[in-house]
Image (cartoon, rainbow, N blue to C red; front, side, top):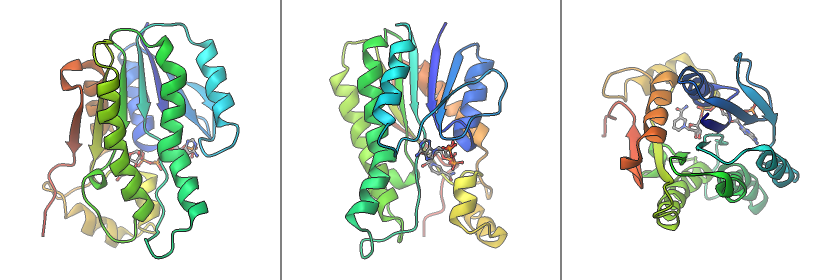
Length: 231
Ligand SMILES: NC(=O)c1ccc[n+]([C@@H]2O[C@H](COP(=O)([O-])OP(=O)(O)OC[C@H]3O[C@@H](n4cnc5c(N)ncnc54)[C@H](OP(=O)(O)O)[C@@H]3O)[C@@H](O)[C@H]2O)c1
């Protein structure tokens, strides 16, 4: 049976992706601080920013049988910060979740990942452009594209593929918190999409499933943002 490991499947896009993989018949394991409440999803509590994350990942790797494994790097932290006020400590804390966590999992799990497996990074529209006051997020999301491209090259001819799915504005807690739960701001953000609405997490979940199951997209940055109005 295919095993799917998703970081941050307790909420939002990760939760929708976990449901979608479960429906496809896979064994699905969520890695996050709080559990997923979806029936059938296995939970392993982990804080990717904590000192014990490497030990938690090593225990997880030890319990997995080798086979087809899809590793979905979805958990991330988004804070309002800028080049003027980002301290080294704050930057390190964000990097732990957004970049080091994925690499801990890559290194620990690759030995068990056989032909047909995949590593799917969840980037953002902000993997390839920037906005003000999202300094650490923009920086780490750009870096994820680099990780994905380097992963592709390092895993050539292993039968394991990779891609970076870059969502646009998606209706989740991360986005709602970022705009201070303001319906007015959410509406103006929705108006910036080519379809005049926010993306539903299930739409990104479908894109992640496609990326995991189709090795032809190896090395690709897949934008999933409904088209954005550029001004
Ligand atoms: N929503 C958008 O508009 C949007 C746009 C572009 C890209 N994205 C990307 O899509 C991905 C999912 O975002 P989302 O909107 O679904 O966010 P979300 O609703 O806030 O969910 C984030 C998930 O990450 C987990 N997480 C956060 N910090 C963690 C930590 N230290 N250790 C372990 N797990 C942690 C959370 O679980 P716990 O709290 O239970 O730990 C939660 O399950 C992210 O990579 C995000 O950057 C989102």
